[in-house]
Image (tube, rainbow, N blue to C red; front, top):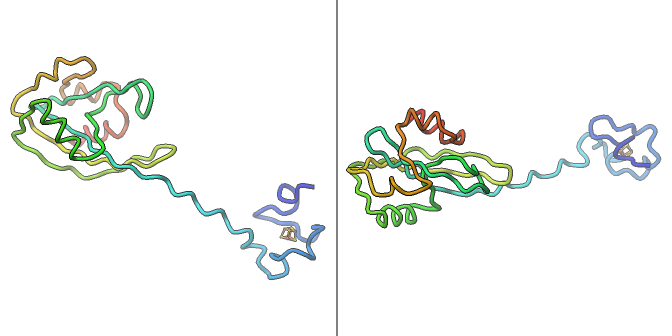
Length: 160
Ligand code: SF4
């Protein structure tokens, strides 16, 4: 007999009909409502990322994600594991900032992990060569909102 499925249900255990009632610790200690204790929730792994919101006037640079992985095939701002990697990429691409600001970090929960994203909004003094690279596109923010972008990016662009 599957006790857990028939008699010993978590919400309404039928202790009166239970064949193991004499040995039941929960019943004998008056803790039928407490035992078994719920399984502790598994901690969700947390990761961090930087979004580079590269602006030229009201245009923003978006990159197409690889087909597999998170936000596969969607358009997103360039993403990095940390600020050092973002800065390195920025310098290697010969970009020049006229103004920069760090926006509030926000979180997005995926099935297997939580991603904390810190957007760095940088106004460029000129549009870099990267504009011509395949998989990258400069779009007016309004146009970008109409493109295939993930929800967190949409929320970000709506408040940029
Ligand atoms: S006696 Fe114990 S094992 Fe049986 S139904 Fe009650 S709580 Fe569950």
